[in-house]
Amino acid sequence: LWHTSTISYSGCAAQLFLFLFFISAELYLLTVMCYDRYVSICKPLHYGTLLGSRACAHMAAAAWASAFLNALVHTANTFSLPLCNGNALGQFFCDVPPILKLSCSHTNALRKLGLIAVSTSLAFGCFVLIVFSYVQIFRAVLRISSEQGQHKAFSTCLPHLATVSLFVSTALLAYLKPPSMSSSSLDLALSVLYSVVPPALNPFIYSLRNQELKAAVWRLMAGCIQKD
Image (tube, rainbow, N blue to C red; front, side, top):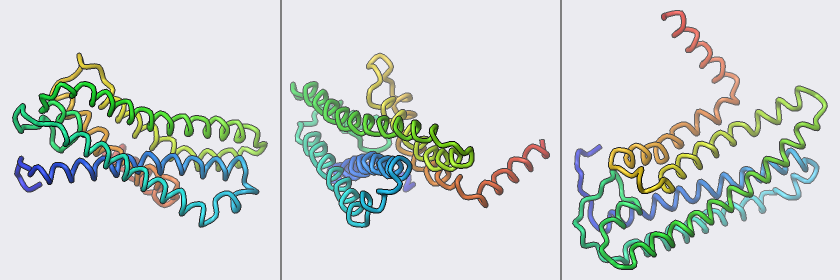
């Protein structure tokens, strides 16, 4: 936005830390939100007990604290390496993979594998919890006799499920793609895909439950079709 392509060393470290902090927090909070939907659909009578204000505050605090520690460890580990292969990042923001490419340390590969292992383990744990919760949710929804009840339950879960799928799939494509697929243009496109697209679509996805917004979208689509 400022038409500059330079950033200071400390600014790069701060940017990386904040990026990792918020992306980790989003994953943890999406997992907490999944648990919220599991309790509200599968154990509605216990909702007030299991998810009172204190429990919600504790889970939110745990998500932010875990994200802070995760970002701190990854940032410290990344910037503890000597950077001797120039100072030009093949990316539009400071991220772990392009910074590691600037390192000439013999432990570079090991650290990269370690970072991938830690991140994948955390993401996989959240993914397992989300999948388990949704399996239980869909089993409970299918047992609901009324069609209106099923529709209400699905309308509660589908925006969250769409957000999780978009977030996880784009991040996996960016970080776990094989080295043979690596190129500057592809890395840039994938980075935009997982760092810009999900946050931009989240408000729209969750707002689809709003009847007024739905009506406005349908009017807009109908107007575009008539113009065509």
